[in-house]
Image 1 (spheres, rainbow, N blue to C red):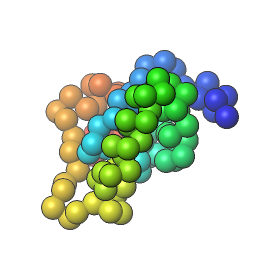
Image 2: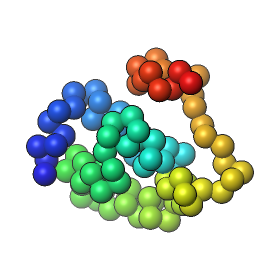
Image 3: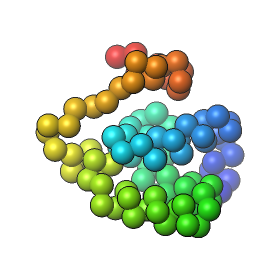
Image 4: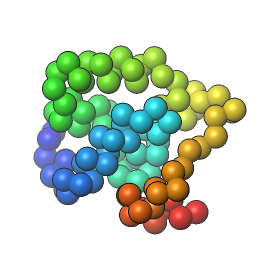
Length: 95
């Protein structure tokens, strides 16, 4: 299971974890950018975080409808930092 994450560099894993912690970044955005579905992100978080941090994150995600784009309110627009392309070096964020 953990072998799937070996294809990522450490900086990419750090960015995935950072995106998972962000309230406004949906699992769908992580899937588009890194190809990991929600369950894979959960597994990554479970293996990467301390147990107490993982439990805290999981509770936060479960009560937060924003993490799932289908549950999002239409009033919440996509958030993109001015520094997003520089941080992630993502070509998708150029749109």
